[in-house]
View 1 (cartoon, rainbow, N blue to C red):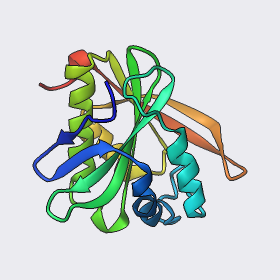
View 2 (cartoon, one colour; view 1 turned 30 degrees about the vertical axis):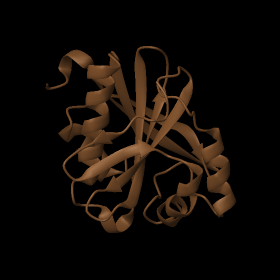
View 3 (cartoon, one colour; view 1 turned 135 degrees about the vertical axis):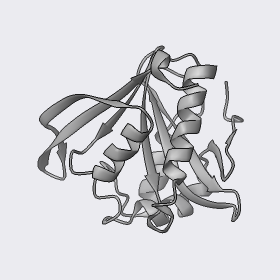
View 4 (cartoon, one colour; view 1 turned 180 degrees about the vertical axis):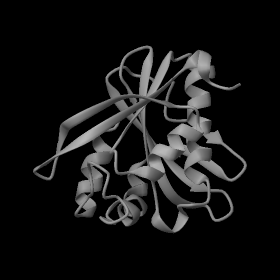
Length: 179
């Protein structure tokens, strides 16, 4: 499968990120307050260019990250991105970032639901996980709303900006996903 994949929902279109998206991605990703639980906050547009050069151009490649941009259909504006880490042939990890002015409208849940559905129904993945900071209560609630369950709490397992932080792992199995 290649970069031509596109997922559509009632309000959103998800398509592979491209170099032309760098400015839009920088605009919401560089907001340090909104993205305080993220492991990566770009300082310059060049940081975004480097990031985009690292993501895979092909979906479903074990050991790589594939990145979608989230576009609001009504405005055609990029409002966030959703990354998929293809851990191996059977498992994937998800990460989602949404612009501050688009949060609280159900866009992240809608985008994630679409991607989880695609991973389970089209790519036949066995298990999908989400890694989340224990203080990120909104993301925890969102994962639980989607049917993910808490599987682990790792104490001081990730070093971010010189500080050790905890990590929660949420997961869902294909057989648990509501069809």
